[in-house]
Image (tube, rainbow over all chains, first blue to last red; front, side, top):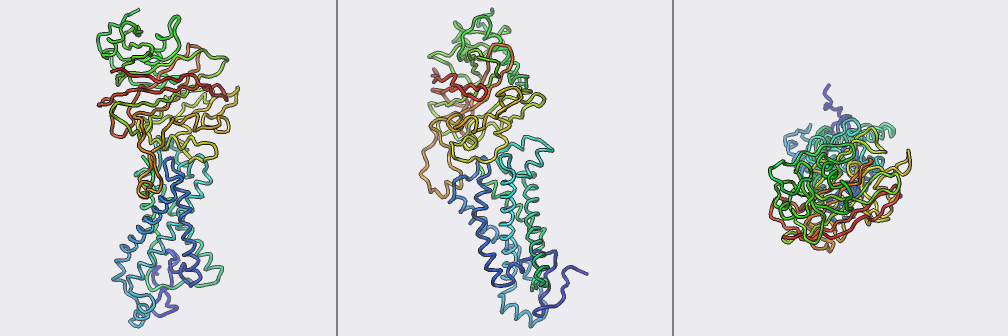
Length: 231
Length: 290
């Protein structure tokens, strides 16, 4: 049975969110949760400042510069959402009546797809910086945990670089962090659904594949973090 | 003793890691400079074939094979790209290791705006605090680092510093305070104000690109120096104390030591680490002649 096939529940034509998809709809399942997440997302500012100030030539003390980085990051994530939502033009939604209902409630399919992707990417972006912040906080003077782990097994000159470089090792490290962040969000959503007794949220469109979210976040993280370091 | 009639070309040997942080060339030169009753202080040494050798021939001290010739620093010093400084400290007081920090700041006739610093410690195979493990070191590329990296690692009291395993392990080293007890040379609990101890005087790192983009701070003008360097020297044997360090290098992005730069003065500050204490050992502004 395809993971995408859905029991019809809720409005006709809506599908249950597949457990393995990124839970964008869970985040906006109710006005209260949407309001909560829209406030939590502001944590990106102090989290991003903390992480970017941990690089040897990072933006320590440069608060306004970090705010600019945050704005550029969010704008980039939104731009990527616009791009990733393009295929949804062709996505069909079950039932003509339902399409009218969908369009009335959510606007066009494309706008809905952009919204679903933007939620996924922005919440994941905040989560990955939270994970990175914890990693640096625990790592202390020796740097982040991934770097310590790799360098303890394979000591190499790259371990003494001035900060993230545009190389495969950096990308792989950020891939690991992004995976942890995305899995964390999915686990929290799954636990909340289990303990609240709620069935999976329904969605008129398929939610993002977490693998795409992970790779996108890791790529942007590599580019943006690298740009903040003086080489 | 061979006078400074140094014909022939021997080329520079590739420095190899030696037991006490000196290259084979350095050890040969030190051996010559410390022969007999020698004068402590600062010397400049040139490879044979360098035009400077002919200008110092009256006071030159040359290695036995004629590969290198040098002279004590005086009021008229000649800068050559492949020259090297040598410092002969006073004798040790007790049985401590020889650890020195050397900082140079060079002004040039036609170049300012250093945005990098040459930060280097030679490969050392063993020290009293690391008997069986060679110390890591920066590559040549990593050694030419942004000034902010060096400065951020040596904060003023009360300021925090970012984690930097490179600076901690590949530049700084552990120093024996007593048998079986070591302290790290970048430990502010031991050595206090790291900013005053290590950082370049009158130098503020240029802002990052993002900071320049928002331009909220009144940043100081470009750095007035053309070359900045910081090195650690280490010696732990019974030989007379002597170590070499780099002659001035331009540390402005894009500039080359072989290019058209003309050093005018170099401030050299050498501090000696004796267990948990640091003593000023040498401070002089070397003036370069044309």
